[in-house]
Length: 420
Image (cartoon, rainbow, N blue to C red):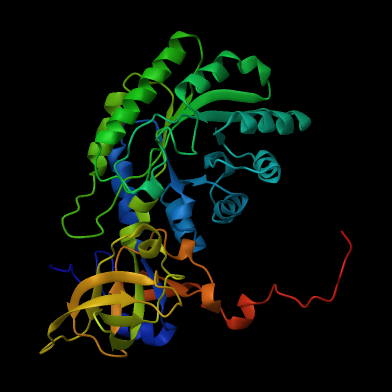
């Protein structure tokens, strides 16, 4: 297959060899121009709509990335108290935060109420009652949207599908209807919004259009019944190009689908892009440790591993992998590209054709800006990698490489014994 260019758009002027020498590997590298361009493209696509962008923090929660997106006008879609604190520290106003997630704790709900989060996306009757109880105790009224599950197949990987009836997210339209009809039971919850999110890495707008149609029909039904809907959150999930042959949806086509479905809606429309904003704005640099010829496979072992980039192991996800540097006279070889972690699942690619690599060579793993560092772990006692933000010929370290001492800093000896 034809591998795309070593440096994706937004990485011009960056000497990756020099960067890797200075900051070490594995190393996450994010492009500030690429991030800003994506935000501006989406803003332009949504022009004319009363729309707000609520970046899905889970995709990449680095503070520098959040600050940059906030400067470009993004709010935040969060799913935990930690993401809430990250968004606030990045300068995102609490009013521009929506709190999603199927399992909000009382402590997280209280935190959100106290800082004035703009809206809760409610996913269960139990959560609705918890917000009522906690808001009433504070003499507050929480604004909320019901996350409906439109029972639409997103045509994506099973582990990132969220809009089918068997998924844990949201509630049926029938249950949501009963909540609106009985809204007086929850006087401290202003139930005036709808929300949906059918999945991630959507490469076709057909499921989006179907889900929007079901959302719009429900909104019109509620409106006819006298229930005021001030906000419709259409979720996120737009896919990106990870491999040759994939075609990511155009932002303008996406916005046009929203316009068509919600024609006549006079309230606020929210969108929750995550991957679409950051995936292609990030790469992971890794060094080749060694080649290994097995009995039936040839392995290329990198210093990056599944703890650094989990997607290939978790989702069988494809990432383009390219050796950088002069390839004159080098043949092409089929490799299983793997890491050093003690798991067979620590595999980035199987049977991938690459220019022949040697120990010390530098490779780029593309499309690593989303669900890369944010899903990282210290499995096998491997400290977390550094992250840098680049802009033209300059760069800034935005997360220092974790030291061993920092990794074990919260561990302690079994000395302060207590009774239960």
